[in-house]
Figure 1 (cartoon, rainbow, N blue to C red):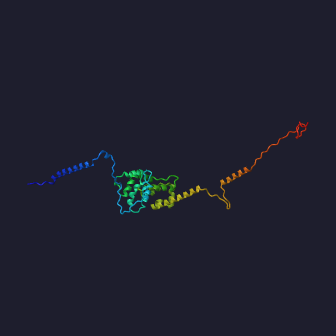
Figure 2: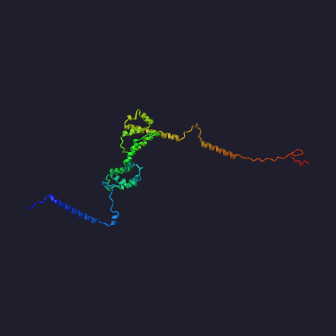
Length: 310
């Protein structure tokens, strides 16, 4: 009686068959891909894969004008530590927003043109096909050029804000807002931001702010407190500009009706001209002294000498 083989008995045979086929396929691939040593050192002639996987655009009218590319290239980001990556992204979105249709595709196509030097080298070092959307592009860009250490540094500057002697409310309010703009992801609540600014003011400035409120600034809500400080800072800036203009321009001189004003320089010049005219009219006469004749020794008459008397 013939016994049927179980499934467990077929497994070793199947494994041997699969391993045999795999070895044959590897040998065939090695023989097909075998190249000379010179070919291994030669750069590939194939076109490199794109870093950005561009979206499929509906319609055949998708076009980016060269003028827009030129404008983007005029404000390129080089990757310097002194540059602001958030400001660069904001300016780029403003330029790319001039094309209303296909915003996602426009931004992905245009953004590489806005990079140069270190930033451009970073972009080309990304893995092929790693960017599939504008959000990925922006996150990768900010993660590279706005690291966590820079965020912590700017956040500490905001928290440690203090007003120095001689600084007005406008002098400290504008830099404080600039620190908030440089680090929009600071993570600080609005009420904490207002507390930090108010606590960093000098005592006299706090008194002026509380007097403008009519009590205490802490009794107002965030929006009202922000608007109040903004208005006070702008008013102080206007007063400072008016005082500066008054200090630079000389005060107007008083004059009587019907009389012309004569400046000190014009008056002095007229005096000098008059003096030179007097010197020109002055004639110096040379006086020749007359010969003095001696009297006669005999008779004492001046008409002749003593020799002529005899």
